[in-house]
Length: 215
Image (cartoon, rainbow, N blue to C red; front, side, top):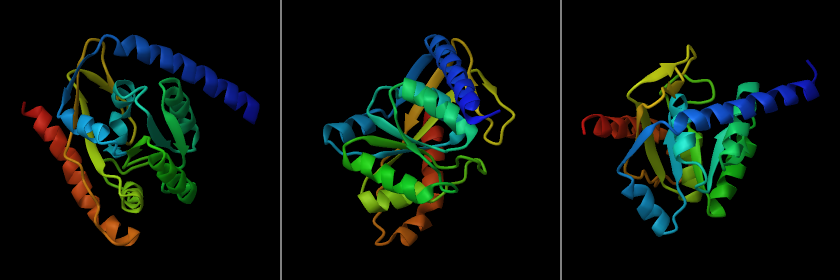
């Protein structure tokens, strides 16, 4: 299949996927936990970085649509479809990952924050291992002084794909919970020092989930 044919296929898959997501998501019962964290940062005009797991991306795309958020999405074929869905939901796109186009992605992500947009990073994407933290978001945070906000999503009923991240699709009429953790501020002097915080970021994302689970 040549490139124009691949583009057309990706376009139609993305259009269908967006339509199905809208139809499905309108049945979800969504609750937010600790949403004041996000409100306070926005009221203070502080741009920040959502840090999340790749497998929880779908409900987070829906619940954070049209909120002046840029999202880092990889340049491989699966990423292209997700990118088109994200654009249709009102997100700005930063293409690349820590393994492909990393320098350009980090530069463009930093620019989005500096122009007042928030940023979303799947810290274990695009290829895993699941629930491990790659250093990209920490480097961006250190360079821009933007805090990271852990965000966690779950659903009372869901399908799980047989992918490395067990990608979650909440079922119709599921209760979807979105939980935020306290902002993480990187005080390291250098990007290399900032990467030492990966275990802390992982723990804080999981902690946000624990808080919501026990409510």
